[in-house]
Image (cartoon, rainbow, N blue to C red; front, side, top):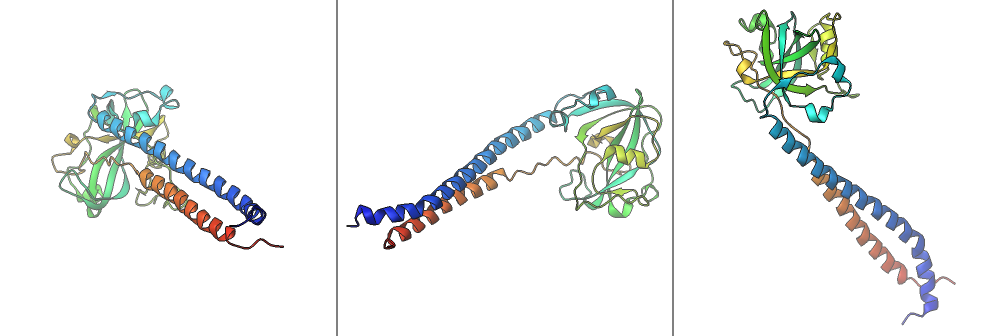
Length: 257
């Protein structure tokens, strides 16, 4: 049997590695637990959004309320607004992989400015058009309704680009990130408050010609939290196994003189 005198040097050699391993293990467990909490929050958010899609439309809040809007509470909420469409449109590039209507694939969401009766301008997503039919002259009868109109749709938060996001093309008016105020400003609209959000029309707003194909709001949430939680917890278990193996090898080493 190994004497206490022989064991003490091994314990001293394990003290610092053991402390480091404990700190790293606690950090991994904290990260895993945080991901579990994020998973619960994300599932609750998805459930709330699915319920929100079926609610009756509410009046669009005015500019005085924009700064204090809770985007998580308003995103995908049905709203109604009255006013008239202005001239011009911009195009948001995407690949529609799961269309609700008959058309999908590479194409664009058509955004048109809508001046509300209260004065502010809201960018309205009128729907999807295939890549080859981006320009209005390629889809006769696709113009928005003229004159006074009341529309309903889903409130959509703006997107934030990153260092990899392509810049909008001013010549083709093609955008790769949804930035409603900048979209409106690119059309020369500078005489009214520009809403920091947009509205997606419902499927019933599709013109008789079929384009733009409205109702193509993409309701999706990235939900990798369970995968991340399993990863962090798994790394914690691996760390325990590695440290046990290391400790065994250290205790078998003869004490140094």
